[in-house]
Length: 602
Image (cartoon, rainbow, N blue to C red):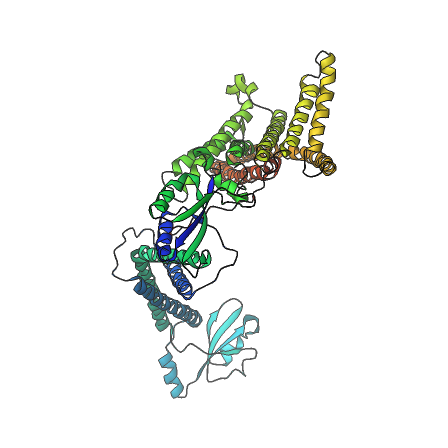
């Protein structure tokens, strides 16, 4: 459901306004209304923004180096400013060491191609008139006679390139060869450099990790303070109306009706002038959803599409049972449902606080899949109806034609339920008479169902002959003249257009639910194919059992992952397209965001 909102207008003396804002921010219940003038910045806001940027940047850096196994978080004597400075210094040293390490590794790789040598010895030989030159040449151009004709020594053969050294001969002799310059430092020195820079990188990263564990909470608290100050300044400068050169300050905001008592008491005790009103026809209060424990699990799904408008129904609790049913229908295997149910249950003991709220949803989806899989008679791709031990109960399992029919029946139920909700929605809107046109559609469907299917073969009498015509006529009058607003002629034209739209779309909406059948069958067939492959390869001698287990585990894991994705996406599509459309959902609501203090990093 949508939490009722009250609109407050506060008139506060200028000298008391700062304390008033402090209290509002502390309580965190007033959603401040934006001013149309737009946002303007001040010097203090700019300074606060800079501090927020510095702190967020530092926390982002430290988060990269925070090691989970370092459970103990020692208290640090560093101030937040010192922690930022130390972080910047350590990061610069670490980046410089990483750059030097990359350069040393590149030089080492180059030197390694020539093997171990002494730079000092080469220089001494050069001074004595013995010049040693180094060359590289494509292997196909290297001539073996050079080894006999000149003082040439083969250094390396990479398969496509030859490296060699020669005494007192230049490259003009060796056609196609390229003179190479050896690194000034020899291999042993470069290896020491690599080790030194690796140690330096590890040293700085360890220091950053310690900084993260000792100062993250402190920096986060500092960031929260600046964020709260920035929010406060935004309300002070950009959302407050100043009257009489600041003598009186006017602020408007929305407050949940169930949280207004404490605010009213404060306002009366401090003699603050205020006005409370409900929304006008043009206003759209912010949306806060309040559902049962079951419905709350599905709120993240509903928010993926849009929040309802304030005057609408919150459809979360109404689509939740269908969504759970559709998931089980699409996955359609009792074995997969058992895995989801047990996995979600066990993982709740080890999951993080951010993941734990979603696991009950996984349990519900697993339970639904388990039940639907038993109804369809599928367990890890095994057709239960063909198991000899279950011969006596195989008639309880649905065959493919029955599953197909069931998907259409469920679709029809949800569509009709959506139309009923549209009536409720329309009665809450500005033009409640539009609900008469929607009731006309329900009357039309009910008449067709009763007289064309249920009572088709009933004994004919005067009432049975006249009633269908009367009901059909009444439903058409209701649809034609109450599907729009304005003059009668325009309403009639709108009603005719409504008939055309509904007739052409209702069957498409209904056929969309065939995807439930298709996905469930696809999941079962894939499971069956995996089992058949495992049995076929499992008959191989010696390694057959190993292959069997691998195919079963990997195949069913992949099928569960892929099928679960489809089992989530397609029910979401049925909900947001077919159900929401037939329920007349507008979804133009904006979230309730109270003026409050941030106390964590969310």
